[in-house]
Length: 317
Ligand SMILES: Cc1cc2nc3c(=O)[nH]c(=O)nc-3n(C[C@H](O)[C@H](O)[C@H](O)COP(=O)(O)O)c2cc1C
Picture 1 (cartoon, rainbow, N blue to C red):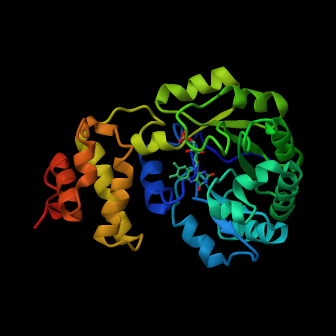
Picture 2 (picture 1 turned 60 degrees about the vertical axis):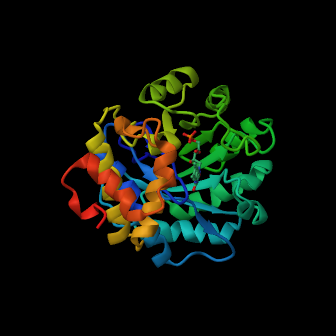
């Protein structure tokens, strides 16, 4: 099944972050040759297939050349397969299945990383979605394991046997959560175990890491999560000035208010979520604590506007 990505570098699905406003800004700032595609944040499917309007909301209006895959998380074969079919109907270019979410809600529903203990169930879920989708590719994203990585190869083969077109391996186990250490040798083990393309994920913190991950592990694709929250230009490797970096954050706040239904307080909170990681434009420096302590939305956005210059609408009144 041909994959629609325009480059081998991908933006990871991130709950609460890769909604349409953030995705569109990152996609627009990285040419298709630098950033190959991205995903919605995970969409949870419990007992019943989700209605088309809910899926459409996650997918957004984007008409970028890079595809946006719909990521689904669930453990009910019929509900997941029917939701995958509806995702295709509302315009998803591929469907990605989440077998890695460590959140308690996912575990209670026996979905996400709970399935890392059940390779046969993983295979069945992938197969059900592959047959529901026909021509559209199904991809799957796993962690290296639940408590340890003993089932890594079984999981990788299960994803392949189910008919997935791509396997993404986040190289940390559920137990390792988001620890700093990322053991890329696990990605290499998955690459050796399957013949479908593997996308490596975990610990890409700089543009040069994409190539290093590919050469050290043999993965065909490389995906970045938090590194793109620090620097949305990580895919092209372009270093931007403070003004351009601050403009990204202001446009994000504007988009959240105009299209995302957030008020100024909500938009500023989302900007702060990025400021936890942000390094682009080098304007945060040693001052991160002060940025994060700023309680007034107008003052936070006003401070950003000072770097851009002339964006008076954001200045505190
Ligand atoms: C805030 C946040 C939300 C996340 N949400 C999702 C999600 O919805 N689906 C998913 O498959 N992974 C999710 N992840 C995991 C990332 O996709 C990625 O696998 C992980 O961050 C490791 O990559 P990194 O080291 O480049 O950050 C999330 C990670 C973060 C930090």
